[in-house]
Length: 366
Image (cartoon, rainbow, N blue to C red; front, side, top):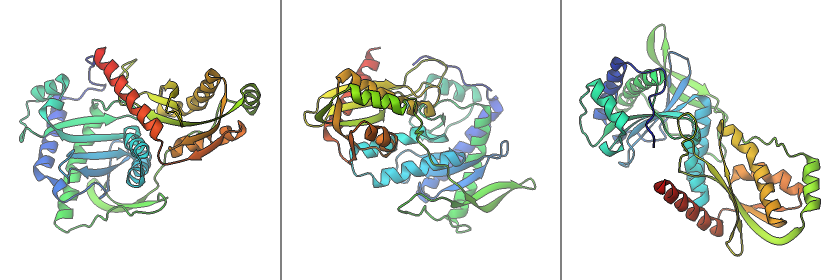
């Protein structure tokens, strides 16, 4: 990966030192020994008023971190991904909802091995002149923009992350001492329309505990399409319907593309596979550019272009993804294609993993 500068506005040495001090204090307390991921609480950003929804991971000795999902949009994305990972019964569902965490706006302060640090991370540690204890757990700070590689933080993010670490430590110690009680997220058949959470907010210049009710903003797949009913009717007339069943899946590929301004973004692939023979019939590479929302308008045109290249419409189509199903149900019906949602797509799973391996190999050769 090429060397990029830190994003503007830059962070002052004193801001870095305060952030590292907060991270070291948080790490020394080891709150993951009594907190777990689904004990969610909120902390207000005093500069913007936005709420960050905090989750502490590491109770199973993996990925020690304070993860903060930003705003009610971040909260909705996180709840969607969490529920999906819990209830997914097959590989594609688990992978899709796991990747949805990379579509969720968030800040992370995690504690990683020394090898995780980039040259720029190491330079920051040296210039800030901070002392890191327990060097197997180095403070590591990243901003997550939807569908982009986790990236270096800027000045406002560093200040908020410092407060998040400081306030999260207060919350977790109060939880440990029995002064407060944070209930785990309730399991329900449907995602909640409102969510009561304990919060840390500033009132009259002082940090206080406050119970608040939030409205998660769940991700919506845009259903609008540039393909008109007339165009679909023309395509139905043009392409014969063949007695073949295909499996279709849209997946983020964990191989970032370094084009334009940073951070690099993750491409998505639309795979079309013959359900009986397992042969890959078509692959389209879609870019979440300029933002993730722009991805969804590309899906239907890409699939229709695949049908045109194949010279036919399949009689039936299997899809594992709920998002993809909701996006394609109506236009596939207009094309006379029987659409069904299933949990397992063995032929497509194998093709997807082969494609992922190939992309990694190509990246390694570049």
